[in-house]
Amino acid sequence: MSALPRHIRSSTELHGVRWLRSSYSTGANNCVETARPQAGPRAGLLAVRDSKNPAGPALLFSPGSWTEFTAGLCHG
Image 1 (cartoon, rainbow, N blue to C red):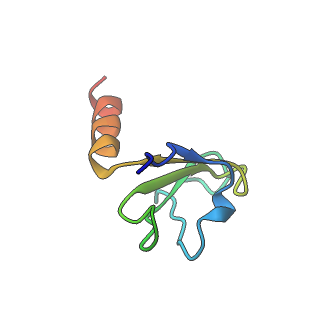
Image 2: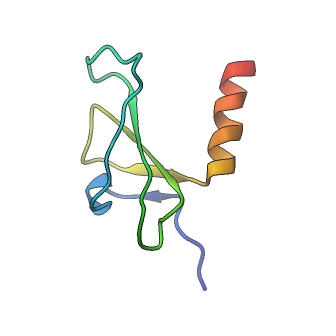
Image 3: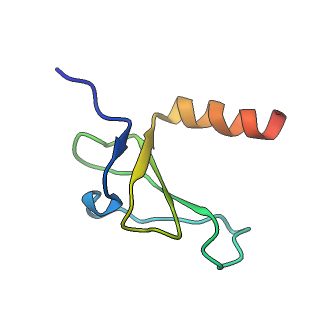
């Protein structure tokens, strides 16, 4: 079994996901959006994309990796 890629070339490949933005977003498309695929090989991962380029690439994180990443941002 091969490992899943850490990104996908286009976030449009994630069918049926609901992209969410932080409530702190100003609506000026200068933030990231997240989605949680519920089915298929990406189920359980967290997808992250640039709101300025919604058809662009998305990064994929395991829940634990995302938690560590955001904790690092908060705590330097």
